[in-house]
Structures are given as structure tokens and as C-alpha cells.
Length: 631
Image (tube, rainbow, N blue to C red):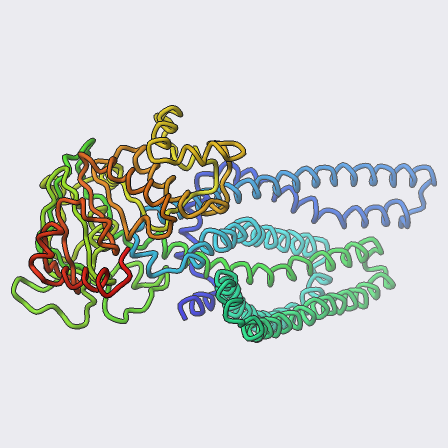
């Protein structure tokens, strides 16, 4: 709905001013382009004058002149005409190049600013906004701004300059003929307004339907394995064809308007030519004006209708740009909910003590819908209500999905602990809060006695190593994935760490070894190989705190699992380490186990202590290894 309303706006002065701020740094180039535009306008408007002077002074002069003199005059006019066209060529080239140059620099500036903004947004923002929609902001929406500057704004100035130039020349030459030519203008404006409104609605419908087609296409391509597994190819094809049919109908409507617009404008131009020819021809017969003047006027009329025709296209560019600008600036204005405080603490190393002090945390309200990027809700961040949590001793609000409820515990420096509990118990949220991917609603998460909100995010996360169950690898070489831009890490150190975790063996067998280029998300490698690379990457950056999420060895074979478990055991020595595990056999070696249930810390102790208590952990163990299948 927000995108639909935004597209209905044809022009917004406030948004236009914000776009122009990106033009300001390039005012010199814009000034030169406008100068070239003036030159181009004058040369274009002067072209019919050469026809007039050639006819009136050489081809059909009123006075009897020697043939040689007439040829000489004609040759001179042609030479000056070609010289003027050369100037016009240079001016047009300069204008086109400079405007395109400025447009590409604005594209670069906008893309860079949006990408930097997205990099700073906390994970909750991406929970609420689909990646495909955000990609549209940095691609097609930015391109619409470029079209606004290069084709829309400058094109509009060029068209108006040409129209004013042509009309001025026509009025100076003969104001009576000019008024005859201008008589059709009110009708022309009425017709173009009617067509423009129809085209606007058709374009709006097309864009909305195109968005649905793109969303369906993305979803079906991402889920092609599931589609084939359940034999839904024909059903999905039928659903996609319905959306595609709607899009085709919208495009046909647009084509109908275009098919009507251009012939109609052309026909009105010909009516104007006929009026000028009728009135001007009579004046030539009466010898009130020359034939050259009439020919020049007909040329002016034909030139005049071209920029008038182009103005309707500029309207569509403006309309699309306003919609894109609203979404882009809405994204850029979105509040960064997780941001460094003024004077945030810089830190090189941590001792590794972690404290959770009465932590309440929720991702959002129960049943909360995603927020459209750029909407008022998104720009203002979450409501202040989200920053509230129940006071001590109060019952938590029922309309909030509290993931953690009054959780308190301490992890001593160098201690190894494990988090266990059913899915949704809040284990992964603990990890996310330590790395400050989210901020708590109440309470505090502290490292070395300092609230994580007081540290610089960059320093905080540099000191934390996280190993995911589904590790992410970027397109590029294995070495670049391990180094992640840190050139201080020597290649010898990379090899040493990879050998330490057992990754060097399979890397050396690859065609280019460490220089082997990986496909998107590490395509071509097995899950175990990607896991070993993720482990090596975490160790290479020498973290003070190690976080291992959701059974990092769950999807690998037994031999690789043994390698990873052995490497993890060595890596965790001397480091504060937190492990999330579902298979309880993998965490017997930790110093302490924290048992979560429905967002609360229910029990804590060693494996043996918890079994002796006979509580919730003992029941989990019994279900998994007595009634279950064991390891």
C-alpha cells in the first residue's frame, strides 16, 4: 500500500530538493552543461533562419541578382550553416557527456550511502524487510534518481529552453504567423493532460503487478527444490501465469496509450502546419511575407512539437523518481536502533567476563507485521513502547513475545559454558545480545563489567568469534574468505590455523589450493568443509570470546565431526566460550551448563550435577538418550 501511495505522487518539492543536494558537489560540471545547453538551443533555433535566407536571398530573391552572386550567397549560407551545426554537435556532445558523468557520480554516491546505511542497520531491520525489497532500493530506485537528474530535470530544462527559444524566434520573425501556430496549444495541452493521466494509472498498475511477478519469481526460484520434491511444477506455473497475465494486460494498456499519444500529437502538429501554410500561403500570395519566411515557420512548427511531445515522457520520469526518492530517503532516514553512543569506549582486548543482569528481551509484539522501508513507522524506528519492559516484580505484558524473561547469569573469564533447551527457549538470543546484534528492553548485558552498549560496535565484534551451523562464505578465493580483508594476517599463519583445524588437507587437494575461487555461499564445498573454513576464520582473527551456535557440527559426517570437535576443544582452551547444543553428548566437557525453558534460566551446573538433580535437564537427557536413539 505504501508503494502504491508513493507512486501516485507526481512531484514533491521537498524530495526534489533532497535529490538536488547530491547534485551540488558537481555544480561546475552542471554549469558547463547548462552553458552547452544554451549554445545548443540557440543553434537549433537558428536553423530555420538559414532556410529563410537561402530562399529569399539566393534561390528566389525579390530583386534580380546576377546568377554568380546568387550562387556565391547560397554557398556562403551553406558554409555558415555547416559551421553552426559543428558548434551544435560540440555543444550536444559536451552536454550529454557532462550530464551523464554527473548522473553516474550521483549513482555512485547514492549507492555507497545506501550500502553503508544497510551495513550499519541491526539484524532486526532485516527481520522486518525482505532482502529482495532492499536490493530494489540500491538498484532500480537509484537508477530512477539518475533518470530524474539526467533525463528528467536536465531534459525538462532543455525542452523548456528550446520551446522558449523557438517561440521567441517565431514571434520576432512574424507575430501574426506565430499566433496562428500557437492557436492549437490549448487543445494540445488538454489532450496531452488526458493521455498523461491515463498513462499514469497504467504505469502505476504495471509497477505494482511487476513487483508481484518479481516476488513470485524470486520465491519460486529459491524454492525450486521443494517445488520439484512435491511435484508442484504445474500448479506453480499456473499461479505464475496468472500474475504474468495481469502484468501483460497492464503493459497492453500502456501500449494503447502510447499508440494513441504519438500519432495524436503528430496529427495535431500537422494541423498546425496546415494552419500556418493556409494563412502564410495567403500572405505569400499577397506578397505580404516572403516564401522563405513561410518555409522557416513550417520548420519552426515541426521543431516546436518535438519538445512538447517529450514533456509527457518527463512527467513519467518525475513520477517514478518521486516514488523511488521517497523509498530511498525513507531508508536513509530510518533510525539506527543499534548505534554507538557518543564517546563509545574503544577496547583492544577483553578478559572475557560476561554478565547478564535481569535481561528482558523481545523481537517485537505478538503478530507484528513487517514494516515497509521508508514508511513513517520505519523512519521513526520502533515505537517507544518497544523500549519498555515490565518493572521488577510486575507481570510481563501479554501482547509481547518475550524471548528472554529476567535472565541473570555470569560467565567467568576463560570459562566454557553450554546453553541447552528446547527450540525457542532463547538460547540463540543470548548469543545475539552478547554480540549486540540487538539491544535489550530491560536489564544489561555486560562484558568485563561494562554494558555492551557502551563499547564501540566494531571493537566489540572484533573480539568475538562466532561459528554458525550454516556458515556463510563469500564469492572469492578461500584465502580472501579466511582473511576477510585483514592484510596483517600472514599466509603462513593462515596455513598454520587451517592445519590446526584440519582444513589444510582438503584445501591442498583443490585445483588452486588457497587461491581456489568459491562460488556464491561456498557452492562446490561440502557442509563439513565450509564448517572447517568457518572455524579457521574465527580462530585466525584471535577472538577473546568464542560463540558456537546451534550445533556447528550437526550436518557433517562422523570423521569431520571428530576433527571439528577436537579443534574446538583446543581452541576453547583459555577463551571464554559459549556453546549452543542440541546433542547433549557434545557438551559434557564444558565447565557449566545453563538450561533454558520458555525464555527463563531454569537450571545451571555441570552435566553430572544436573543429572543428579533430576530436573528439566535430566528429562531432556532421558528423552534424548534413553527413549531416543542416543548419539
